[in-house]
Image (cartoon, rainbow, N blue to C red):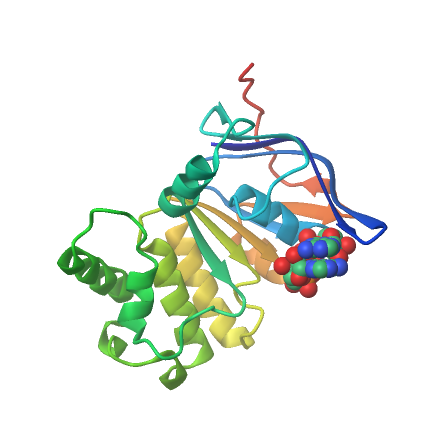
Length: 231
Ligand code: ADP
Ligand code: ADP
């Protein structure tokens, strides 16, 4: 459902150019749980950001559900980010002065949804992540694991097909990490989940497929998807 074809991306700071992704080709299937592993600076976050439409590739193509994104306009990227993708970060990125229910509702970017429907959906996803009893609390009243559950609920609020998670357990202890991974594994039953991690044990224990990055290249893939030719 997602295909990177010969994608390259570099960042220029002053006169220095750093290659982040070097001619990467990678396909992702519907409903698979993929872990992207690799050392710091190997291009993992850049890959996730490109796949999520948070950053633009320099060359190559990103194919989404069979369609090239080469001619995507800003409005197409907005629609893709808002309707198809949910993001989870290491640092939760919650708004501290809002209740967790309001935080989840902030994730609902679909237009034409009534306030009541938004609230109902927030309650539903908070229940799914096990936080229904904490709905009225603010992030500061929750543990790290609970805050990550709020962020996961927010990512689920628009019913995306794709969940992108960047070091989702990076700030959590081992026991809490396992609980969050169980939840993400559950979510991956009917979504494509791509998770960036430094942690090989977590990747092996939970993901269906482990892709290793090094120096902006894919150096191994435990279960490569067959590339679908679209042109
Ligand atoms: P991680 O290693 O956890 O993936 P990094 O610390 O490499 O994350 O990067 C964190 C953020 O800083 C990312 O959003 C990335 O785009 C940005 N970043 C990384 N390296 C640089 C850099 N050399 N200059 C500017 N921004 C950077
Ligand atoms: P990883 O997630 O594996 O740590 P990144 O994708 O964050 O790797 O970074 C890949 C390379 O690109 C690194 O050398 C990093 O410093 C560089 N980089 C990432 N984001 C930026 C940025 N915004 N500006 C400049 N360099 C960046």
